[in-house]
Image (tube, rainbow, N blue to C red; front, side, top):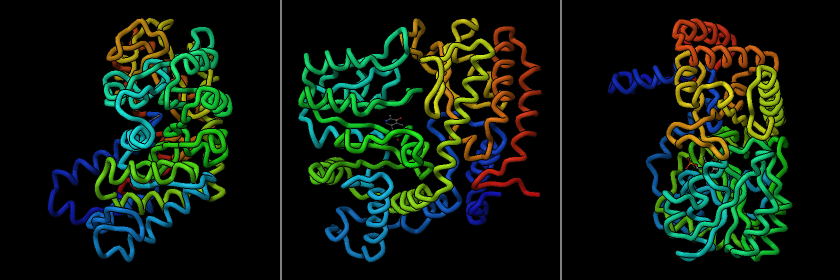
Length: 423
Ligand SMILES: *Cc1c(COP(=O)(O)O)cnc(C)c1O
């Protein structure tokens, strides 16, 4: 049963209700390793599904363009105060609809069309919005891209410095979507200072680790910090842009009226709830357990001969290069999905294969950590992954159903926030 339960939805729209329940069961029965996903708490679900969705509140607290903000203003102010306290920042804007619009707001605040922006290239682990060619950010601005080193799989800081001093971008992004290693914020800050660029840290993936003390913070190094709220931070689909006091006005103006209309107040409330949860001592345990699980899983995969980009992980994320296993990423990901293990195929640095059919797999341990799995289960998980990858190479479907059963059996011992099977 869904928590909160969905009696009206079942009555009025059984088609959608059935699909929502089916999705909940799918999330319950699968080992979810998609690095950007999580399970939010029932409290976050309740706030997200509340009557706040009925409200319009363009503007900011005390300066709205619509009346009736008696409750929305304090909600947004609480979310802002909690973000500032949790991350130790001077300013927080909690209105961006999601990570991509939040990043666009950073461009809007600091760049004019055509200005140079520097970011980690997409196939190396960067995000689309850091100036990749198909993104508005790569079409409307002039991208300069840095890479990871072929020998270490880590960001090439010498190249970052050389490029920054040669190209003089106005904005430098650090962070990305497929980076298994600690981001060296002080080194980026030094380079940005030398180059006269604004440094923006995109911590979408690692915000929960930073909040929980399991990854160094960019605060004091990057003057602008953007993040989603739904990945390791374990809140609703949403985003924030945080900054020093100096940039507060520019950021706020860029989000509204620069890019957006009314903020999603139900999301703002859910962000406030998630930030409160992230300030509890248990959240630090969760954050360090995410990293412990990722390390244990990486070790178990290495033992089985898997080639991990950068040789391992410092955070929640592991990037496997399957080349030495004679299987491509996509068929392996699809077979794993049939075996109850959900992740995504991903390009690896210097991937000789095409982006839609790349050589790698990306996985993350935040969801399974929320579920309560620990280092103890990681060797078993690596064994299942290995069995499926080998089965993919041999086209052996029978193994997959058996593993899916075993996965279901294991997960029945680990409750899922937001849904439970009806007894
Ligand atoms: C997920 C992510 C985003 C975009 O977030 P959306 O909410 O999907 O738009 C931006 N930057 C990074 C680094 C991300 O990982």
